[in-house]
Image (cartoon, rainbow, N blue to C red; front, side, top):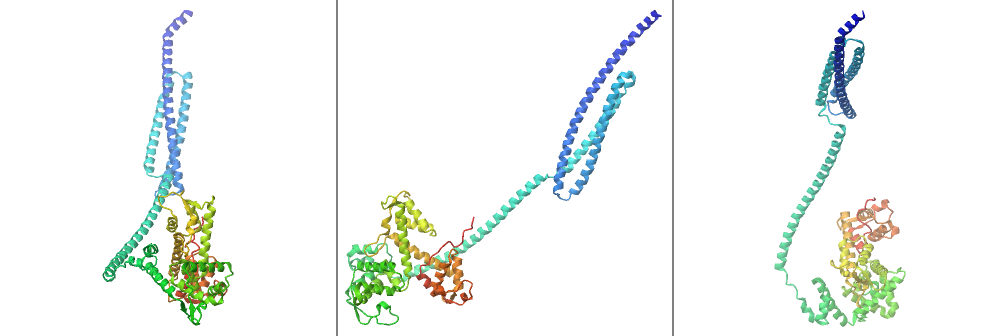
Length: 559
């Protein structure tokens, strides 16, 4: 029996070797299949992550589309998106089930490796291959559906890009509107300039024809050098008098020279009588002695009148005060003679600043406040320049000079400030550190002639007053023969000069209508519409007063 078993063992040895060989082959196949499955699972996981990212991206696009509906495709896209979402949800669940089945088959195959023969578990790779094929078919179908969604949603713009483009479009539209407005404004200005150009051409042609007519009919320009031998002092004095004067001014100077000679030849003036039209200080019957003072004496006497007037209470009218001064200075007997003498001199010498201004105030053509305020302004300027002169040498820099002028005259135009600086000695090529002898700007000669700086200040003051009154007349929109009420004058003054305070406004109205401030009706009172005067009279009264602009035409907007 033992020998028989041994023979049987020997006979089974080849079968055992074959079984070992088959077992090894099966193990190798299993390992290969496992490696292949791992690779496929890795690929499937990668594709799964990619698809999940695509799904997240589509969900973001869905949310952006839901926040602000685009055009008519939104409803259809929402419906398609819901269907695709359900489809992908089903695919996800199917894939999870497939993965679970694959894992189960793998575990079963491992168990069968130990418990079954090779002929039984050899069928598992076929099932796995079939399952893998089905999974790939599902993946292909999912890929096709994903491509379809890309094609359908490829033209949809994200909300962020849409808002950015909308903002850009709005900015461009605003720029276009601004450019259209600028273009319209420039076009209107161009039309106005064309019209102005045509009017200028017409005026030029008209002036040219008038020039030709004047050249044809006018007399030759006078030869003023002929006056050199007639005027006292000879050519040198005439050149000094004629320097910088036009023909009209030269005629005045020549008349003054002739009148001065005739005035000195008179020993007596005829009395003008006691008529109401005669000024009180000239009311006298009979001849009046000519005191024959020099220009220097007249100017000195007039300055004394002003000095005493400024020191007094100013309750007395200026003509009465003038005669009272002469009575105190020369006595009652000679007062009338000096009144006539001074009156004839100041009436004759209109080119002399002291005499002409005194004559205008004496005859009521100008308020004495004009002269007083002008003198106070000059004193203030001199004080400011003296304060800037820290070394008390009588010198300041051009920069300090410019600063003082701008601070003193904040409403003056830049070209007017430049005129004053040029008269003071500034030149475009000079430095701001150049020194100026400011005291020389305020000097006067013996006959009362001031320096060009003070003369230019007076000229600018008169020009600014004329411009202010002309602007007031334009604002009223009336003819000089029309009548203007207190209400209209008040409104016009406030329109052209909004910075006027109530006290100054009432002073202007009082001057224009020749009423006391207490007699003026309050603002809003019905009497404003009943009190009226001629516009010409009102303008003449304002011209005689110290009227000036108190602020800019339009108030600057507050920041």
